[in-house]
Image (cartoon, rainbow, N blue to C red; front, side, top):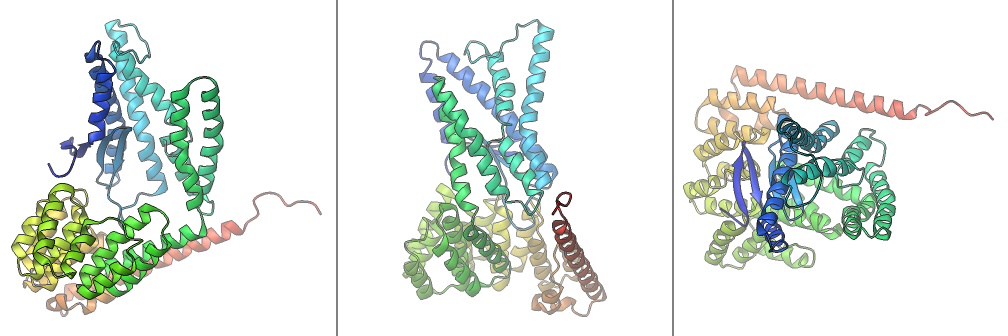
Length: 482
């Protein structure tokens, strides 16, 4: 077990029970000391109900090609998946994934009702700890319905948000935040005046993020999102100078921790690519007030200060306690520079179960390619593609296979990369790693087909944009009278 919490797999999904969930169990236990078994019954009913809800999200997410993981916390459950280019659901898919949670609960609640009718058990919806069936019905029906209220971040609020996003010109973030506040604030006031304090507190907790969402729906936030998109492109191209410039800009603009944390991590990766000790220290000094706490950045700082043994020891300890994609990437990268290729490979694959393993694998593949670790590139790719066969992962495997003299395997990987969306035919035609294939007729044919696909997709996208502009130019109703 790496890090905190209990981790296991259930029906193929990674599941984590956070320490906060066990704290909830303890509190329920202490609240029912006269009959502590009741506290455990409530905790068990919560666990079953919330897990079924999250499995509803996860199953539908997996049907759309995502790799979801479930996390149980003090306040409920979360279904998450790694987000990278090409791995973001459409708005309609988001809506279906979101609705799947409550409706999984309704289905389970229906089975409980059927059981009660067949067994002749009296039906009640209650929080009485002596009535487990009543608790199950409460959480799966009443909470399921409440969860569909259009209050972000409840499921109903998320459905509203992604429905608004279907109309591309609408400010979906701002509208859904205003609706959440407009409905939630009066409801919280009513609950408080009706002496339903716990409902009022719950509503305040639900609607409070929407005030921040109103702030985020601004031109500045849009500029920051564009910078994030540029950084993602530069990361794929391993463009460290431009990447650091954009990460620096994002750090200076960010007024939210999520942006600072993300910019800090990508800055660490770009600094690692550059591998310039004085430059690393200068960057850290320039942004010391903006950088978030980052084990990867601390590792790079120790290394830049000349204390490489302490840096390596720190990274090993930190990975064992709180593994992150960025820390693994920079740690393995340093091992590769030292010529410890096999150790870097073994360290990397020890995180094969992590949701971000395929992303770490792509970065580390690049480092192996620079240092002639071609077999490691292929082996790492074969493992990572079991989670997700990204275009970059497959392309790196093609380069390594070509370096190893296996033209057939290299071409097969390139075909797979094209199927997954790889379209950079210009870079591929001059990539020295693929020199073995340059005169191969299958490679020339592949380049032609890739260019054709790229041109066709560009034309289709331009056509969609033109249609959208035309539709937005049309009047929304009958003409008025002068």
